[in-house]
Length: 374
Image 1: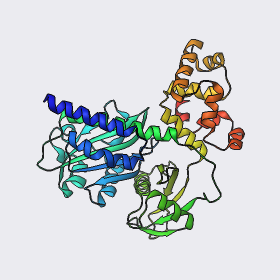
Image 2: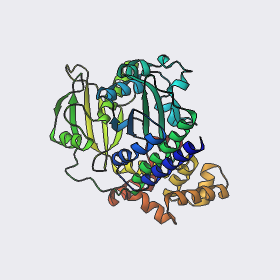
Image 3: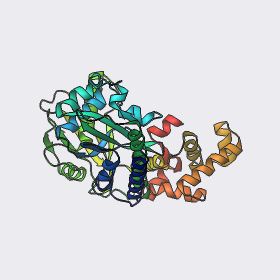
Image 4: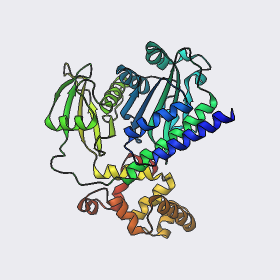
């Protein structure tokens, strides 16, 4: 037992070292997968990057899993009530779930087991949300075949630590990214998908963005599959919310937004989707999320960027100047800024200077996350 524990700790150190090398996320997982298997044996795996705002997967890497797995697992995650849902693991105190444990040894109680895993010969699942800095940046599923031993408690704990290292790597890659203004060729693209999510039509801009997202002409990119599943769920539930959307990292490293809807009365079309570069204000939003600020720190940051002094921030939030100053110190520490000017410059870099001036410094935090915490 001590030897196995020491071996697991070596694996965790090796994976953490890989995560500090600044590798593209897909390359990182391919490099880490073998070491992870040394500590937590598995026969199949799926690693998917997620949009931390929506928790929808944006791209994935499969190991020993059939192509149909993606559509089936998305349908389960978005439309089914089930055990160990990504959304629950991402928001809960414990980010790891073992399906056999969660179902009290009766995995057949899980729709995911019945509809996705059992038909392809898998019987054990250990899943972790990859959470760091308050955001979920990916999820990792490990699978064993039916008849193989269940994932143990120590293996689940090791998976949680490895997932956190992977999350920190994805989060750090966003903090290190530079942002640039939109060029004229960055026009939005429109793509129409049929009932089987086959491509019905796409304009030239969409063709370019689909290639960036990894579309191979057969199965659509995972980001489009996620939006299609979310659109079906919205229509079935009669929800009046706006079209589902997800932000996905492209092959080039830049971020794209995919949003779509199911057009009424259009035979043969399951989804109409628009793909375009993430707006600078949204990129700043992602960067703020990557900094790992608490809700209180984010409120202080927003008021600081609006030009309020410490006493004014304290009065606006109903807290003492000492507490406001303490929050601001934490903001400086997490963003790496040493002054208010540096703080504004760090965030304003995510948008063209003329747009930053026109919108005003406080607008950098405008978005769903900021409104909920205001």
